[in-house]
Image 1 (cartoon, rainbow, N blue to C red):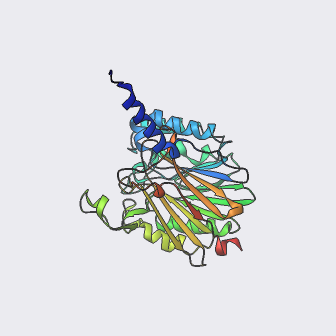
Image 2 (image 1 turned 120 degrees about the horizontal axis):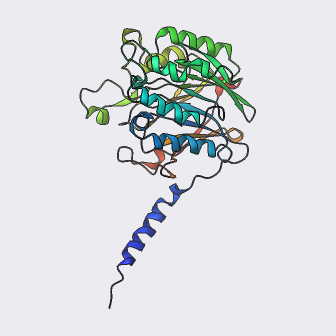
Image 3 (image 1 turned 90 degrees about the horizontal axis):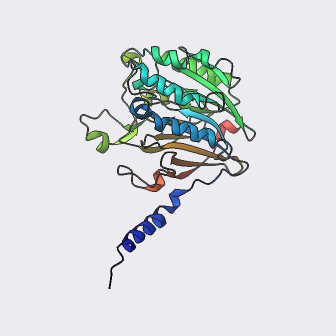
Length: 331
């Protein structure tokens, strides 16, 4: 009897389809919902894989209606080397796809500045405040858009998004606090680069994987003036009743982490960290009528949601649902 060599391949393909089927499709956002897209750590794309960056932003624009995307937040490390102008050109070209189509903001990561003193010369050249001055959703900035805020509304809810540089100094936090106070009628989102990962600075590379993790208590930028994520939480996030969400990236060896805390006014704060390469972005689908936030990790380049990774194999750490309990901020 002649053996059918194609059969094992067909069986393997069928097994893959069945086992990965849950991740293959991204359902359209239902009526009454809306989505915020989050771009973490595009540095490698700007440096050597611009096609991936372009695919991501093109997908976001093409999916604006089906996914009801109302805002895009970049959590920093836009480029890999702050002094390499070619990388900024690649990043600008990719973000141009979104520019003028969907409101967005950019956080400045440690790779986007001169870490020792916070110099952001090329960021300001390609993404300075003059680029956004004509948009009504652009609230304003400090340091020529190095720290900025944006406003958007969806499904009867009003939001403010603060994009803060990595390890923002006290002077930035004071400015940010004033912005939050001036917009105390809006639900507040903080987008910054460094937040969740190894609690203390690892002594070796293995420590980035194995050391205890949480809200980080060390820093990379702005020298003695810089604040650690824990200090930013204590000084800015915890005191403000309207803050309900913190978005970050930075740690490719943590990849995905969620911290839920309670602010000074009893408000629930969800702190979401994501940094997975292969084109993965975060999609935050708000379901206001059910006080629910659906968190999805999706790759426009692969065409499916994340089923798990070698570092974080559990699917439920990449696709999950959170309760939106605005507490004091709803008053």
